[in-house]
Length: 105
Image 1 (cartoon, rainbow, N blue to C red):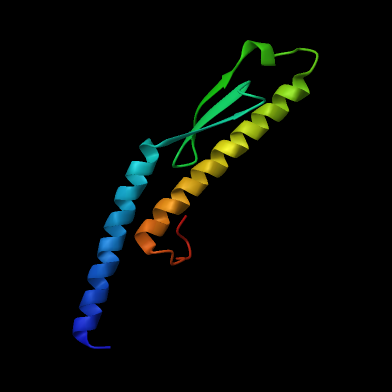
Image 2 (image 1 turned 135 degrees about the horizontal axis):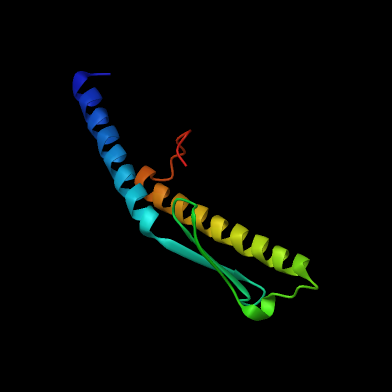
């Protein structure tokens, strides 16, 4: 491989690194919302797969059926995290052109 090709490839790698750093910052501020039980439980997560908020409607709280609330919470959290991961994957594909790079997201 010639020096010109090597320099060109290094510039491309540096640009990709800068794009990924910018994307990570942007994703940290983007939020995804998911709900379960017809909106009884709503969870918001960001692009770093961090939970930002959890809202529970009062009617979802039944001391006689705590298990139902636990199930709704799990469903909403898992859906929010799945949507967040999907958003990250879509953004990564924009930068990498769909190329899978081990160790990235």
